[in-house]
Structure formats: structure tokens, C-alpha cells
Length: 223
Image (cartoon, rainbow, N blue to C red; front, side, top):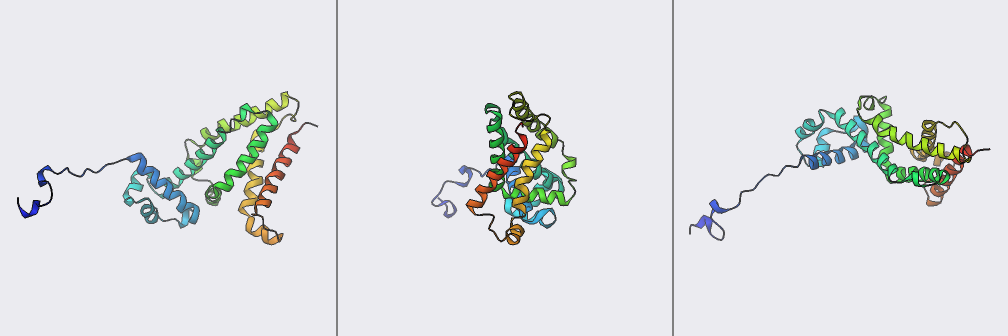
């Protein structure tokens, strides 16, 4: 046995190391790293080099999968919206009576915002850019159409049961539910100072969701 082979199998019989490639896993790592970077620094502040380092990929892989930083940002936005729409579908609101369905939707939207603060920051960043990325999306309307239809069906069931007023626009209702939580959380620092109240204590957060539910139902309930 030669000295080079001492303590091991002959080089010719050793299994060769094989580089494994998993495009979906690589793409998912890039998206996860980009989501964090864009949420922290916005589109303008995030750097492709940093995202590549976080994802542990070569920067060229980002351009290969997403074209450029704007394409990557759009993919992150689409994934973020897909996630919240998936969470809403899993509520199975069609199985609940209309009043309970609305209560559940309001509370779940609020809880989603609390668990996913990056969602609000990403929306803020896209609005600063005039929504120009979402305007190019081929799937964003497809993601939202079923949700609007779901809310419309809840409202229709409530009308038929005589508990909801007639003619409520499901899009307006969705914007209102989102806005009641969105404004509170995105402005919590300045509002806490202005009103000399910590708006992020457990008690304050619980009171806020109760207030949201009461206001939404107060508008919807038939007189």
C-alpha cells in the first residue's frame, strides 16, 4: 500500500462527490432572504449582494431566477400576498354563520398582521414606489378575486338571513378591515407618543381587535 492510500480506500474506488441541485429549494432560499432584506431596508436599501449572502447562493443565481432586483421584489410581493390569501382560505368561513364569519375574518386579519410585520413593511415599500411592481404581476388579481368572492358570499348570506344590511361592497369592506389594523400598527410609534399610551401591550392589542370587530359589525348589521 502506498503512503497516499494509507488508512483509506484506493482513490479510484472512493465515491465521487456529486453536486446536488435543487432549483425549487434554491429559489425558496433566495425568496426568504429577499423577503427579510426588503422588509428591513425597503426596495431601495436592500442589496443583491447581501441577499445572495443570506441565501448562501451566488449572486448570478438571483439574476438567473428573477432577472433583476425589481423582478425579485415582485416575486416576494406575490409570495407574500399568496400567503395571506392562503391563511384566509384555511379559515373555512363558508362553514360559519355570517356574523361569526366576519368576526373571524377581522380577528384573523389582525393576528396575521401581528405575526407577520414584514407584510406591512413590504406593502409600505411598494406603495412608496407607486405600486409599479404589482401592476406588472400576472397573478395578483387571480389571488384576490376568490377572496373578494368569498367575502361577497358571506355578505349575501347575511342579507338573506336578515342580519346584514343590503348592498355592502365586499371590496370596500375588505379595505376597511385591512385599514383598521394597518394604520394602527404602522403608526404605533407616533400614536403611542401623541396619545401617551403604549399601544402594543397585550391589553391594548386585545382592546383594538374588539374595537375593530364592534365597528365592522356595527356597520354591517341590519337596522
